Image (cartoon, rainbow, N blue to C red; front, side, top):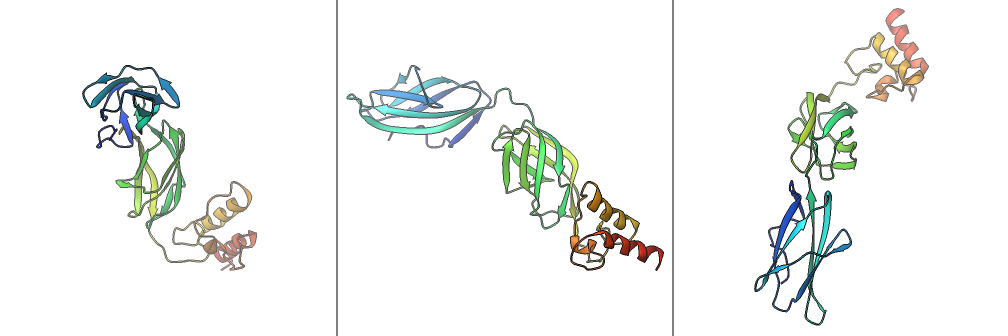
Length: 239
């Protein structure tokens, strides 16, 4: 075989700026070529009888490495590849905002987490529960599916592969199931003036989020429109 030790993962994280690579190679291997991010490196190799050692200076962030072993006639004997990510200089992630800031206790809602210093491979936690669906879009944005939780507010925490983390306290609210109430646009279990105002904001200003459009459809007309707000006002003030 020609390989680095079998217990190395496919992606290795280190806070160092240099790493010593060690591996084994059959006697037929006469030379080793190391390629990093597509570029061949001219680095000395220290040989044992069937072992080799390379002291590698790491570039920032991801170092995608390929190692080739060649025989006396230049024939390829074997190769291996892996990635070393240098986390030297990484700063802790910062969670600035979570949108939407609420969802059902059964989980599943897609949440956009914005901030800074997010890294590929970051993990997202809602309270103490880790999201199983995380996509790091950039250093400033992550999309994660909220896992199941219990009713109430929880912090949202981002943890980078170097184990540094940052969180926003009380950033996400798990909502307990409520009985359906037509006209309850705010989802607070009552029909009052706030529901009419929420519908008007939804229609004419910033499109405020309504959790249940069917509940906001006060007159059961099949859509949310001005007549739904009027119906609530008539109910409240005309009886």
